[in-house]
Image 1 (cartoon, rainbow, N blue to C red):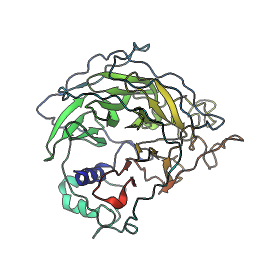
Image 2 (cartoon, one colour):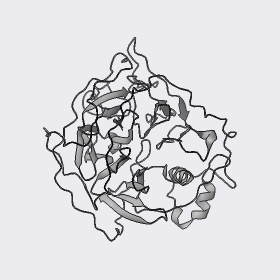
Image 3 (cartoon, rainbow, N blue to C red):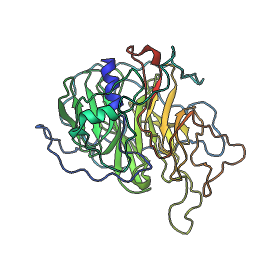
Length: 410
């Protein structure tokens, strides 16, 4: 199963809602599974994310804003802002006993990400592998064998076709209860795929779901998506299938992309979600002051920590232009991919430092802004080709490839 999960992750990790490319074309309607997607119902009134402390002119010490400990499921408090109806599940989730998260102290010390035993040499191209073109659509479903052969992976690995869903996948997660793979697509549906590659619709009605994650040990699926799709003035949310909106009022959506993104649950039992910036590099986009440095929204360009029961939010770290995905490794270290500005600096993988400022809005370009004196910007651990838009990230925790234990796959 570990091998299967890794292969599926490697196959589907190329996600489409990222920065630096053109806006994805609207998907053509496709036939849905026999079970119809239910209309959205009014959500239980949740809290709206409000201003919390964000590091601005000085780096914040590696301490977390206090958030009440997660407990077993409780009803969300009453919201102060009316929001659009939340999506509802097509079918009831399997019954699961929800364990109390075990609270542990987060590991503030950065650790070496080197695998416990040496990995193979630098990855060559797979046999027959070629550099794929970047300016075309890819009919992979009509040339499965060809595309399996073109995907580049390290020596000793292979990638194989397993199944498909209608639409453009944006995020995947395995259920800890039924073991099936759940897949969000840009058009708004979440599918589940069984061990034979069979697909059925699970939940629908979302506006561009970008991150999904199961709360550990449960069948509770947390989803990041948009509430209002407007450039800069949009709004994003985190919701729970069969429960409704948990967090509202999150900033969104530079060039209709940057939004609430990947979700991951930490070893402390809390949820974490990446939120993109509302501009290319922190500038005012229009009006008489266009191009000047803008005042950041307290929750933008950050990774947020939230109570999965109440939705109360604090800022965990800042300075991420578009942290599309996040993942925890076995050492208790959080990692984040980040899409950088449009003047084509290298893309980034960050080893996230709690309370740290990781870049945005300070970059090195003719129209960019320099950090104030005394502000420390934490550099990325790894950089990638400009405009390559690294999206998915996962920390390997299986036993099939011991040389890659706790290695980070992007």
